[in-house]
Image (tube, rainbow, N blue to C red; front, side, top):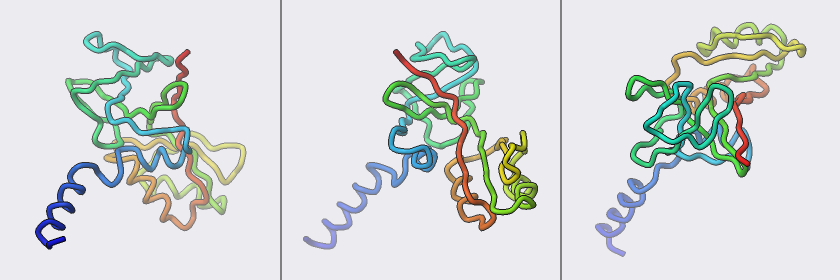
Length: 166
């Protein structure tokens, strides 16, 4: 194969699919049952121009082929905030920016929020753990990567809003 053909093949393969889909890291944390789907989104605003696939509490889950969630974070479009959604075998899971974080030492749980721009929502009975919210974030996947590199954090788990479709 010539260098020109090799370069063309490389460019075509690089532009045809991203290395990681949006929310790939969140999906990996949750396990094999959760799959990314860039055309799914959720909103607390009722959108009559789209047909909802499911409802869970105040959340409506939509599928829109015309545009996709290209980043794993809340996105504003048409004056509405949309949240990414993972697909499960029997339903959907809204990625809403709430996390349970467990540290190795009790003192570290009080510093994690400041270090990573998170708001502590609640301490948990296990004194090494707390619930955090990630306000104004550009990517949940990048947040997971940052938290993963923090030597004081033992475990990070996203708290998802889940629905079942019957």
